[in-house]
Image 1: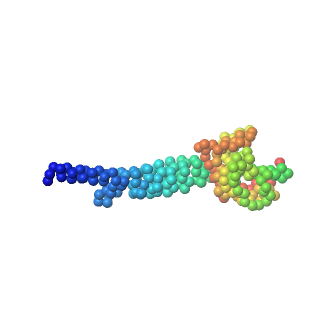
Image 2: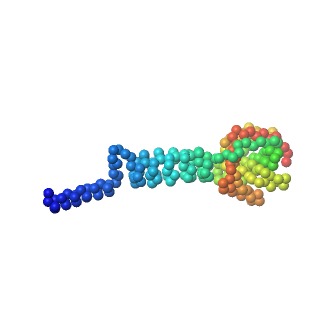
Image 3: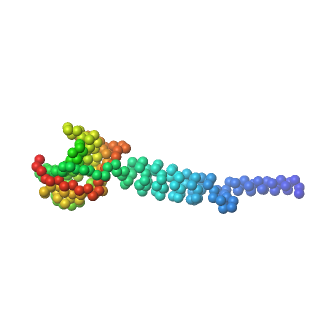
Length: 240
């Protein structure tokens, strides 16, 4: 074999090896899965590839905010299907209920039909109060009322159907914390004929800050939620 022939063969071999090493997805020997290739978005067995946002089987990839099947990813604040993620404060479908009941010792209601103002009071006799108010809500009798069904209904300033729980209140009416109902329904069986009798279903109140001069309502960052489901109220009608 001449030196020239050998040189040509070596050059061809080196060229072939170089092209093989630069291929898009080299096949590993003996069928072994390649877990080092971060450019292969079709490889669903590669759990080390954090660049593959289409791999819904990779539960270790906390950078993939499109993977709604990964219930262990607490960094994904866009995944409203993950009911185990207690760090996602934007997920209103997954309320973390710090409180799930309200023990009213005294209940009573008032009606001012001329002004279309109706209110129920539940007094826990420990500085905690619940109020349910209807202000020009267009309600005249039994039926189902939906809470928080518009932006205006999500603030105490403009709501016509309002549920508020205030706790740690002093004798002057200054309260430590307030919770405002953002969603849920009230099934009314007696609308201020003999009193106010109803059941609160799937009601979620979020902790808020209320300006008691303007009634402007702001959701408290990191605040807690109060949930009431199947909760009965029955306040006999009294005079103002």
